[in-house]
Length: 257
Image 1 (cartoon, rainbow, N blue to C red):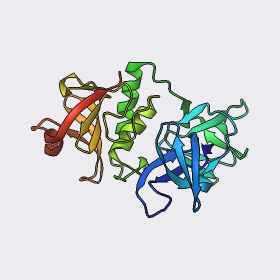
Image 2 (cartoon, one colour):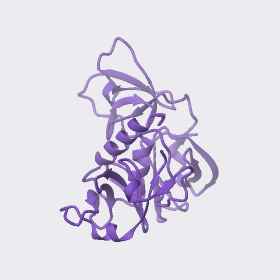
Image 3 (cartoon, helix red, strand yellow):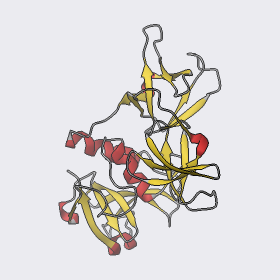
C-alpha cells in the first residue's frame, strides 16, 4: 500500500485525541498491520509505526520515479496556471511522473487511482541515493535551512510545521539517507557517535530529548520548541545565536558517513 494523500497524520493510538507522532508524505510505502475504528496501523518504509486514517492509503499503481523538491508543489488539471490546484504535495513526496515534448513547462503525475495531473517540471527531481557524501552533506544542510522560520509542530515534517527529529529526518531523507525518526542516537543503524570537534556540516547533534543538524563553525539548525520555530543556533557564547541550553546539554554528535 502507499500513502495517497498529500500528508497523512500518524497517531500513537487509533484516536485523533492521541499523540501526533509523525506525518507521512504522499507516495510513501506502508505495510498495514491492523484496522480499528476507521484507522489502520501502518509501518512506513522507514520503519516507523502508528495509526492513520484508513482513507489515506491506496493500492500502489507504479513505482515512483521522481521526488518533490519544492516546499509545496501544485497538481493541476491543465497545463495552464490559472486553475486551482487539485492537490498540493509537500517536499519529499514521491511520484510517478512522465514527460512529453508537447509540454515545455509541465510534466504529468499519475496518481494511484489512475487520475493524471500536471506539475511544473522544476518541482521534480531524481530520487536521491545518498551515495555521494559531499552531495549528501550539502543537501542535508540546504534542506534543513529551507525550514528556517517554520513553526514548531510536534510530529510535524512539512513547511507547515516541523519538530526537531522531523527536521533532521526529512533533511537526511532528501539526501537519500534514512535515519531514525526520533531523537535517539542509538536507533539509527550505522550511526557513529563522535565528539563535536569531529563533526562536519550535515552531521547530527543529540541533546537531552532534542536533536539538530550541524552547519559547521559551532553553528547548527534546529526546530526549537522554546522558540516555537526553526532557527540557527550556536555553541559560541559570543554569538548572537548562542544557545546556553544546547551548549550545556549536548550528549554527542553523530555521523553516518
